[in-house]
Length: 377
Ligand SMILES: [Zn+2]
Ligand SMILES: [Zn+2]
Image (tube, rainbow, N blue to C red; front, top):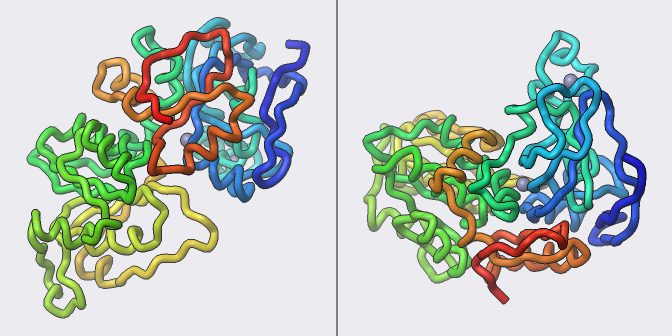
């Protein structure tokens, strides 16, 4: 497609410029799409502030969206123009051992390098491109029951359900601690409740506002450690202490949670997650961690307590869309602000304010309607 489009271009740390840029061109395996709504991700904040995760500047960041297909490459046969969808760009490097041996795009260890809004231009613009578009893999049609604003939140909600698939909670129930009540923490609450009715969930955050949202998402207990009691002590009062072979030699008795999920990137929480679980407990690390982040972890937790560590990067897009359509996932209560594209700067700063915001959406196309959400000042 010829012409220009409006975009918010990140030129340097914290420097966004609203400008006209050429509409991107597509290759034979790509699709061009128009964005109605997008959302600000926790991962966009370090990208905006410090250019963290970004491969280059200037760049258009943003990767959570509802889009409409406007043009497809010659080799794309199963994605019709006009289709409403959510998705991401997954593209192998074509040069590594995995790619040369016929591996799929998402198996390439370098595929995140080309990620939408990190390696390639993202969705804080009128149009964007999905490279190597594959229906059911990187492109997921949205059913009518999901509106365009909520559609933009299917991407973060896929994190909880993807990882709960790896954690495999027991149907008889689990005692779960989730650190962080941002949208990723909330996605875990809703995913655990959808997959394991018997589980008890405690959520830890320093924002009372987000803890109230966690309750609305299904949390059984909420803990604000800034009010005096650590999550470890608060949960010991409810669930008691756990036991493991050498717990009497440890400086601190072991907690009695069976699963802990870390979604804060606070190094104290990273370490405590290991202490708060009992023998053979599972710990999932699902926040964005910086290059200099280091946590002090007692090796006995791994060696003697047998804590199993689950990498938290997994997402399940298809199930996120399905559960959203079925009403098992809800995000209207989590969306607290909606801004037009040209106010992206303000939107990003608002989403850094965890005391008064949760999910911040961007109405990229002003022609689209407004939808109900949990509007805050
Ligand atoms: Zn995201
Ligand atoms: Zn590769």
